[in-house]
Structures are given as structure tokens and as C-alpha cells.
Length: 412
Ligand SMILES: Nc1ncnc2c1ncn2[C@@H]1O[C@H](COP(=O)(O)OP(=O)(O)O)[C@@H](O)[C@H]1O
Ligand SMILES: [Mg+2]
Image 1 (tube, protein in one colour):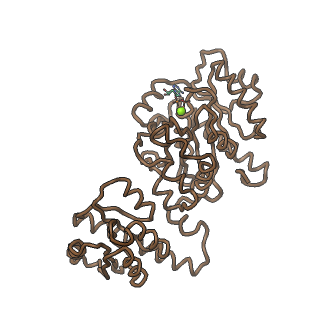
Image 2: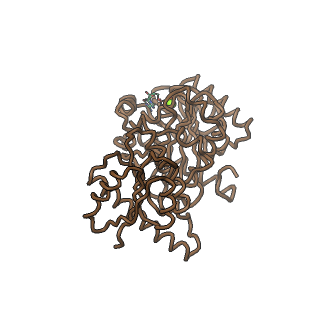
Image 3: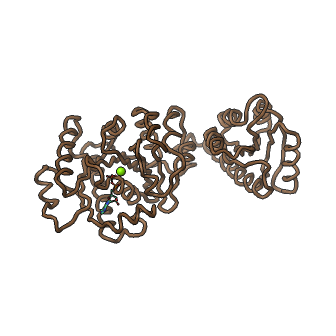
């Protein structure tokens, strides 16, 4: 195995020396140079072509984050580990966005430093060999980024918007569990919260307080798969990725409908299914999402107001020129003791109900309160089987539309 070649960039001589000392007994790590400023770091990165750079943030001329960005643009195989006194998550986020691989606070512990360098070094070596292979074989499918994050779907991902024209009918419950049901090794799903004011997707999966759409939308023009992968929240228990709503309702207006759609379109290159939860209120974001989606999952219940609103929404879709074929109509909170049956609603609205999800308050509410979606631990219960049948209906609809159109669906 090749040695890991390390460049240290820090304006303080003592830090450079300490780090060098920490690394001197590692037989597979070679410190190939040191730089005292961001500018010098950029220059030496070009000359020495190290595998890993240990980068300070605050430096006299160019700061470490800007230097990282510049270096990664020129030499994407070089991996940067940021060293900073700031434990501030904002710094961490900025560093990650600039393309840093890891973040350590000063002074680094020997073990942390060494394992961060080894991880980054491995990544650098594998990026180098990939780059070399690519040059020989003229860019393979998916490209380097696609291969790296491992997600790139074979065809463009499908946008599935879940909408309920009546609040409290279980829109978020369905969106969260549907995303989990659709997600598997070959068809990865990302769950996006389109309820920008009062989104609660993050709470449903107990991942609140992490990155949100605000970390992506404003920089939608210069995204790459790696950055997006870094920002999306990983829901370990299910394997899905989450793009949460802003932390505060007043931040909602910082995301325009246009940005939101472009984020969804970006995700189409990384995931097979982009499931979007929405608010009942038809904001610009929700309307544009519906307009740009492949499938609309419309939720109703057995209550007259919900049915009435579903009818109005179906009319609206017609006005918008959205084909009925794209609508998968589902009934949630279904209770067979109530005389308004799915068949009667189908007949009345002239739109077949494709799936019914039974009422089970105990499972549904416990799931939300624990932050563990019921598709993880109760998928064989009737409520879970209802979601599975909805997922099947969505898949079938996508296949059917593609067959008719003769081409993959999605806004062309
Ligand atoms: N199938 C169901 N059976 C029983 N309760 C449900 C079901 N689906 C959702 N709920 C409950 O209904 C309430 C509203 O659900 P939520 O998904 O937040 O709706 P919305 O997003 O439409 O406002 C929650 O308490 C949820 O646990
Ligand atoms: Mg909701």
C-alpha cells in the first residue's frame, strides 16, 4: 500500500510541529510539507500533490475554508481535514460545503488525528485510482460522483408528492412510511419536507436539529452529489435520506419555489424516489412541486370535509392540466365500521381509491412520539400492510405511465 502523503497548513509553528510529532511514528504516513498561510497551502497542494491536507481555518491571507474550496476544485482527489479551535457547527457545515472530508477541533488527540488521516488517505487513494481508470475508459455511467456516493439511479428518479387537502389526515405519516417502503438497495429513496413553515418530517424520524433545506436551496447553482450527500440527514434505522424543513417558520420564505424545484431535480440524479411531504395550504412551493411531480399521492379519509376537499383538489389538478393517471388516491385512517366505504368514495369522485390504510391510533401515535416510523417495527400489522399496498400502487402507476408515454416520466 502506498504511504499517505500529508501536507500541514497552519500559521502557528507550534501546531505544525505538534502535528508533525504526532505523525512521525506512523509508518504509513509521510508529512511531505508544511505551509503557513492559505495561499502557500494552495501553492504547495499544486506542487506536492499530497493525499491529505490538514488545514487550519483562521490564517492571515486566505482562510482555510476558501483554500479548501480552491484546492478541491483543482484536485478533487485531495482530501482535506479541517483543524480548528472553533467547535461551532456552522464552521463545520461551511467546511463540509467547501469539500472538507473531516473536521477536528484543536488540539487534536493523537488517535483521532491518525484515524482521520487514514480514512481520508484511503479515500484519496481510491479517488486517484478511479480518476486514472476514468481517463482510460472515457467516463463510465454515473460519472465519478455517482460512483462515489453509490446512489446514481439507472433512470431519472421519480418525484412523488404526498398531499392532503385537509389537515391532520395523516399526510406526513403516509409520506414518511411510504418513503421507507419504497427504499431498498437498488432503489434508494429520499424524503423531502415540503411543508416549509411547520414541517415535522424530522420529528417523525427523530432527526431534528440537523441540516435542513436551508443548507442546500440557496446554493442550488453549485451543488454536487458529494455536497448534497453530506447535507442530507441519514436515517440510519431505515437507510432513507431526509431533507428537513427549516428550523423556524419564519425561515420558510428564504426558500423560493424555483430553488425548491431545482433541489428536487438535483435529487432525481441521485435517488430513485423523491418523496415530498406537503402542507395542506397550497403555497407556491407545494403547487410547483405538484406541477413538477411524476405521481401525486392524494390522501383522504372517510370524513365528508376531507372528501369534499379531495374533490376540489382533483378539479384543481384538471385545471392545471395534470393527467388523472398521475394521481394515486389513497384513504387513510380507514375504519370498516364507518359506512362511507372506499368504493363509495371512488364512485362519487370518479377516481379509484388505489390503497386503503387502516385506522390504528395506537401504532400511529406511538410511532410519532417515539420517532420510530411504524414501517420499521410494525410493517406486518394491517397499518403497515396498507402502506406496502400504497407503495405497490405507486410503483405500478409509474410503470403504467412510462409504458403509455413510451419514455420515462417526469417533467420533460
Ligand atoms: N392510519 C392511521 N391511524 C390512526 N392514526 C393515524 C393514522 N395516520 C395518521 N394518524 C395520526 O393522525 C395524526 C395526524 O397525522 P399527520 O401525519 O401529522 O397528519 P398531517 O400531516 O396530514 O397533518 C397523528 O397523530 C397521526 O399519528
Ligand atoms: Mg403534516
